[in-house]
Image 1 (cartoon, rainbow, N blue to C red):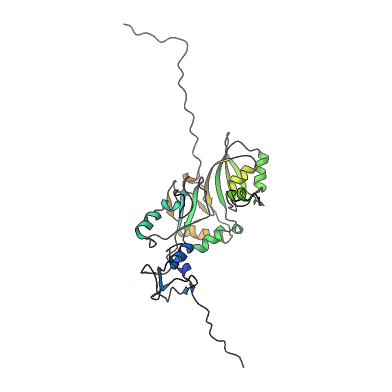
Image 2: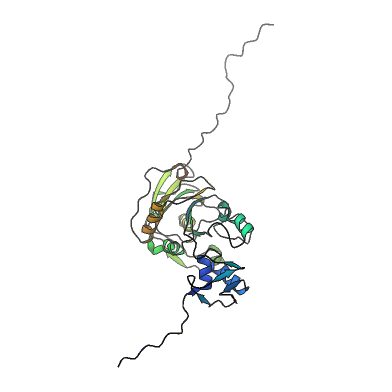
Length: 312
């Protein structure tokens, strides 16, 4: 005779902090603080335990007295991050953030956690001095897949370096080169160097000169990777602009943004699944190098015949 399994007493549903994050209230870490502050009610009772689970389809969840309406619709934006902005939600040094480009800081001041715009998060990083294409979304699953190095999503950059590298040095970068893993500050503070070999990269010179420009395509995105790669061959990176990410090509002006089209979102999901995607063959203006400004011609007085005098 078969035994009948007893009903499980294990809690069902999702953790409250995850529900709050999916609803766009705050990041998971910030949602934990909101719960601990006693600002969340579950079916009329204040909850302060982080392990509490709930079902958004059955339970009534309130934050600051306002009822959650379930997960917000997923949104996807392309942002052209200018130089001098940090890729983070908040900056302890009070530097400009990419959130200000989308007006989210003003909305948060007006509405608190209940902003009228979805709470977006940057996918990947562009450091303070870098610029270009940044993907922002509230689709956490897609963001995680795109961020994994194993996915092999193509990322293309325009890179200006100080001094002209030799062909042999560029070939080293193409084949892969040893760089320090992690943040430079951590390496300096501990004194230990953890080295790692970069994946092969596609590199083409797109402008010659004393300080040339290169187009570099990577399949990984380690901390300050481009700067570290060129420093290994003895050249400082002066400028970095990302112009391609998966099937996306930068096509908005500096500081601008736009919502992605459904087809572009589908292409991102294909790239996240490791499938091949195609980019625009003709580069938009935002993804091109500006034409160099010709030097001004200096005025030189004519030599030879002296100027004629006017009759008095």
